[in-house]
Length: 392
Image (cartoon, rainbow, N blue to C red; front, side):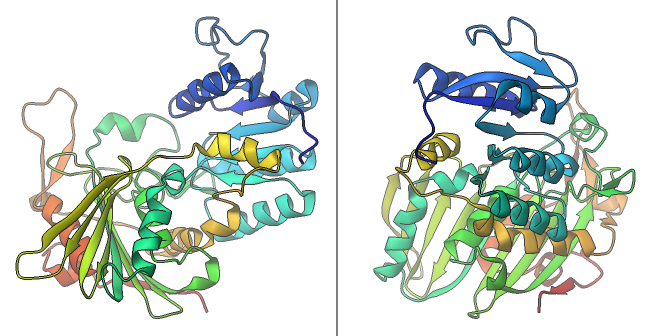
């Protein structure tokens, strides 16, 4: 791999929506001399304005053909979830290294097919959990090892976001569990707030697939969609650990998602989009011991450095095995329960239609704080009891 010469030719598959962020990041890395955009795979070609400053860029809706035509060394895949495995394997067949957006696959079987194919082709694959590039993650691990909060008793995470009806109509696969017979699994825990799940698992040092023994899920929907928009999950690990995540797209007020490490002598709270963490000491009125902000390593830049032999890959497929166990638990769980009309209300005074689940902001936080599920926290709509997925 270290024989690759920079700037590395890169193809971007999916350059609009979230993919626009990748386009701008590639622009940054091209200016730094690390990458050179040679191809864009989109159903509707980008305009000259969108590609300003990149030079000659080939465009095609045929990803495999584009890789062949451009001689790309790296590809960034930010396409609908059901396409991830096929595109990753197309890259692998051509020896093209990959940044693959999260979730890496819609099922555990597809994940293994992708990971095994990449390993057989000896390509590097980076999974796009950008929060795991935060320098706060190793800092938290050091704090835990130093006994800063005593013995760890569990890890929680909370995500309270707002999304309107248009969000679930942005693409044919949005808000779907399946589409044309293929798994999609576009639920709140597996896609928009997947970082909360992956980050909590990382802080619990439970990223490998075999770290997970059981996954309990409670999946609900306030919007008229097929998938879930208000859900919680609790993971139990092989070493006896507990990780609980509460998430919603129907909050009263959007808030920064976070993960929290609970210990016998305090807690560490990590706002992963801000790379900020706080340490609190235990007590009747927990005292703030420290607040720190940390840097972040860009995952595409890390992939380039890895290919040059200068860095360890931060988020290889193996580091997302536990997350994919959660995806599989969500995929195989019963259909999300439609919340009764009394459980939610339309957001007043807003031009875009969205739904607010009563009290869900506090419920999501309580899940992260107590490691209990919604049904255990007394939400009268949180029925039936959780579904348990066992990995062994």
